Image (cartoon, rainbow, N blue to C red; front, side):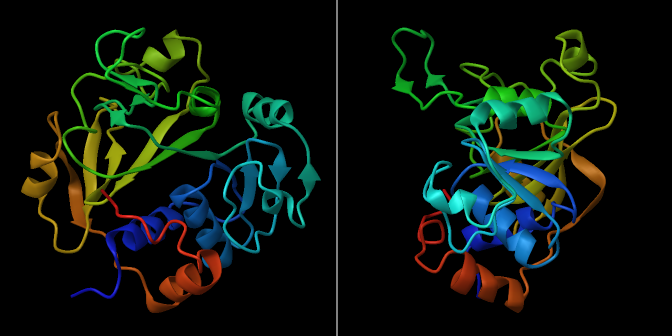
Length: 259
């Protein structure tokens, strides 16, 4: 048996996607844990930004919201949501972490509603918050979510955050900055990237012990494998120690199930 849980594997894998000296806007929960872990391991020069206005904090512990006072701790700036969004609009932000209830093959996300009628949904979700702005304006979108057919769907019930919309050229045609869009999707089963030409999702790495058939059985659309399909590296002992003892000792995130 591995000495790590699925959520720990997701966080450690997501942390490795962030390079040093980049800027990332994060929310709370698993994306924040991944960014904190990256900052304390492979990307010490990573600058974290929070929607409520915190820029460049050195987080002592996991914040419980984007407005938690810890998101300003020893920060470079204590500013506002308007300033954070302006930085994204000016093309200064490299990454954003976004989640959702549904995702499709082009990386479009739904965090608004489940059902056929907007006024009478089966489930009313939290909505966009800053997800639409961040997904529209930051250079690369990172997604973290559990992997099952209810979430990975052929057609979204509502498009909250644009991915590559309907395919190649669609973001640009909608007026979004050229070169922006989904980058990686880290799930409980695998890591997905997006084909450079078709802009469709493809399996890049399989988590240890997971097969390609398992991933496809839990996906509601055709999901090809990348030509160089490989296994996701397992978390190393030091990263796990930092994650458990420093990033999330109170198990705000690590205490949750991955699906």
